[in-house]
Image (cartoon, rainbow, N blue to C red; front, side):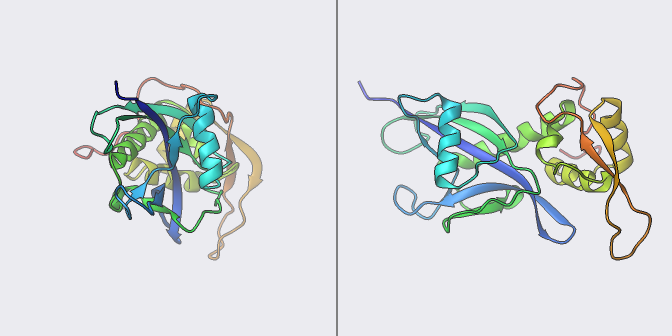
Length: 231
C-alpha cells in the first residue's frame, strides 16, 4: 500500500501599494529551485510533522521559510486531494488563508516575492487554484464579517479603508456606503484624532479603528457586492 503524504500550504494575501494610489491584492510566493517544476512559483508550506497539528505546522513553516511571523489572521481554507495534484506519490494538501495588514512589510528571502493575484506568474501544481480559492474566501468574508481588520493598519481614514476594500474585492467601493455599513454593524469607532493633512492641504480626515480585531460574523447577508453585471 502506497504511503500517503500530507502537506500544509499557506495562501498569504496582503493589499500592497506598487505606486502611490495604486493598491492591489497580492499573494506571497517562492520560486522553486529544483524539480519537479523548477522555476515555477509556489505557495509556502511543507510536510506535516508527526508531533504538530496543521495550524502549528503552517505557522512554523511560514516563520522558517519566509519570515512572516505577524499574520493578522489565519484560518483553514480547504483540503486539496486530487490523486494527481503532484507528481509521484500521492500528497494531500491542507491549505490555509493568511492575511497580513497593509502597514506590515515582512522581510523576505531572495527567492520569495509578492505577486498580484490578478496577474499570477506560472505557478506549480494546483497552487493557482488554491490562491483563487483564498481570494474568493476573503472577498466573501469581507461582506458578512469584520475581516477588514486583518487588512487594515491599527488606525485609518475612511478613504484609506475604502481603498483597501476596493483592492481586495476587485471593484470600487463607495466610502460613504462602506462607513455606513460598518458603523451600523458596530465595527468602526473614531479615535478622536485626525490624519496629517496631505500635500494639497484641506480639512484633516478623522481617524477610525475597528472595534474588534478578531473574527466575528456581523451580518449573514452579503451587501458589498460588485456592481450589476460584474463578478
